[in-house]
Structures are given as C-alpha cells and as structure tokens.
View 1 (cartoon, rainbow, N blue to C red):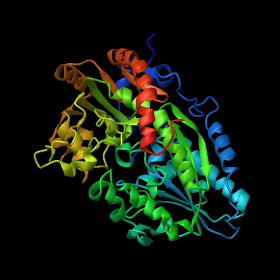
View 2: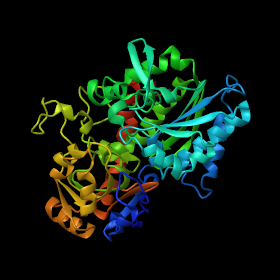
View 3: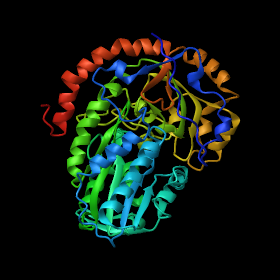
Length: 475
C-alpha cells in the first residue's frame, strides 16, 4: 500500500534562510513520492509520546514524572539557577517538545525549591543569533520572566582548570549558583561523538568558548575531542555547580520519553544504549542505498537537515559504519575537510570518500550560517531560486558554496534536471517528516525489501559489537 507523503516541517522565518513565503513548492508534493513509517520498517520501533494526539501534554507529563525522581535539595530559595539549553534541540520535531521541556524544568525548580531566580542560557554553534530567534519564537523570554538569553562561543569566557590544563567555558553559562543541563539524546553528530559521552558533549561545545569547542572541528577531530567535554564536566568548578540533567529522549520516530538524573553518567550510559538501539537499524538501512537523489527541504543549515531522524551530514558518511569504534578513521564530512588537499582529494588513502550513493543534491530549502561548501564541492548540487543562491553568496561561511553549485529557476526545473543527470529515480527527502521518511516509490520498495535483513544483522552482529566496544554487556 502506498502512503501519502508525510507533511514536511514548515519553513520558518530566520536571518539564516530565505523567507518562508519564498518556499513555494515542497519536494514531497510530487506524485512519484511516498512515505515509509519507521514502525513499518522495524517491528521493534519504540512507542512515542510526541507526536501525539494529546499534543505537548504528554511531554509535560513525562517531564514532571522524570523530575519528581531528581534531588533538588541543594538549591535554596535565594539561589540562582541557570537552565542550560542547546540550539539543536529546537530543530527536533518543530522545536516545541524541547521548548516544553525547558518550560517544565523552570516550573518544577521554582515550585520545589522556592527560588525565582531561574535563568535560561541557550548555547549555539556558528549561528550566533539563532537561539535568540528560538527564545522569541517559543516565548521562552516570557516564561523565564525576562531572564532568557542566547549565548555564543565568542561571548566572554571563563577559565576552567581541568586535569588536562586550562579550558574555557562561556562566562554567562556559569554565572549562577547552580546549573541544570537540559539536552536531548538525538544522535545527530555521531561522526563527532561516536555515541561516546553523548550526554557530556555540550560541555565542550554549546557551553564552551570557541577556542575549546574548536577541538572537535580542527584540533582533535571526532576520535580525539570527546575528552575535552569530559574534562570540563569533571572539573571542580563545574561539578560544584552541577545540580542535575534532564533529557528529551529521541528516536527516529519521535520523542520516546524524558529522563532526568543527578548523576550525568548514569543518564549517559542509558543514552548510549538507547541511541544504538533506536538509530542503529535506520542508519544501517540508509547505508544500503546504492544510488539516489537527495532533497534538502528543511529549516536548518545544509548538514543538519533531517530524514528518518538522521541528519544529512551522517548520510554523507553512511557508506561506512559510524557506530563502529574499530574503524581506523571514521567517514568524513566537511568537519574534517582539513584532511582534504586544495584540489579536494583526501590527503591519505584511508580517508573515506563521501557516500558514492549520492548522485545529486536538490537544495530546495536549507539555511546558511554553517560552512557547507564541502558538500557542494564533492556532490553535484542544484540550488532552487536565485534568492537562495544569493543568500549563500552573501554568507561569510559559504562564500564558495555556489562556486560548485548551479541555480534552477524553480523546483520543477531542478527535479527535471536531476532525474536526467543522475540517471536514477530513487529520491530521499530530508524534510523533517515526523515518524517516517519521504522517498520516491522506487526507493521505498528497495528500503522495504532490505529492512528485514538489516534488522537481523544489527540484532545479531552489529549491536553486540557496538555495545562491547563501549563496555556494555549485550545482555
């Protein structure tokens, strides 16, 4: 039975993307497109609490239940509390579930501790004003009574003495008596953290100065930078302020629950297992695609657009197993473009090429504000509309993106060209479809045919290996 495509995530107003009214047609609207639900591909897909017919009520109830088990006795009525957030959480399922979790955390802290000095500190990556947009969009400035602000890695820093020397956090993150770490378990940049210390990573990224967070991008790379986040979190300065953590638990189908813990490593172990369990099969299945046209159609920078809970940057590396820690070198996306020479070729033979299954990219709607020229340089790319092309031409982080891409007047023209040039009718659309994935009929047939074997291989071979690599018993 053919399903109608799932409604893509709506465009949103942002200084980093074109105006929503300029997105006149979505890729899922084509008659040759259909959708697959994750639960139809894999029988053990967990039930979700969002999306849900009760809306955000289910998220609030789950958050209140999780927080009821957390000790908050260290927070006194006159103490100050910084609730820490990260920008990526606001791109999950429209952003409302994460915003609701932040609201509940504030409400419960105020109710149980008596303090009203609760501030929101929302960190970003390279789009320094992004969380300011989210704070207003979800009216978090009102809910936090005017005490909400976005923080950027170029803000004033604070020196943190760690076991490996002085590292730098953002001063505004740590300017309270207590900090509460509110994040999500979405595997997202699995090419960075490799599902190791996933819960700890924001301490080296969202809450850190640019000199420290850049260890992931330029100094250590994905195999060596994890210890910086752990070093910061293990410092006496941070541990003396840490109260508890609350996480939105994600799966490719949606939100599966909320977890809160005083011990971040207990939560981290849980997220490690759940991340492998929930995402291992869909990521392995996407790696089975032999050829396709990729559609970018989501309000996010190029590498972070979503399909089946997986970001495009990880699909670019899906020609290898991103969860396998035995790999000498992980698959490479732009993050390690330093491993490519000026002609765009890998410096050494062992560096993986980008996923050869991607024959062409149709960039219908995706933001700038994040260095993405590596993608257009290595994969033939068609950008829809001159205005979107100009957005990238004027973006300091993407000045060369259009040097490697061509412009189509509209989506119809782009798709017509892509079908003929790529010589395939298999299409996968990264449009944030909730609960499933929008694909062409031909790719749907292929994924459905391969899913049973992939499920068996992950359960019997890959999952035991992944868990053993991380010191977790398969039983």
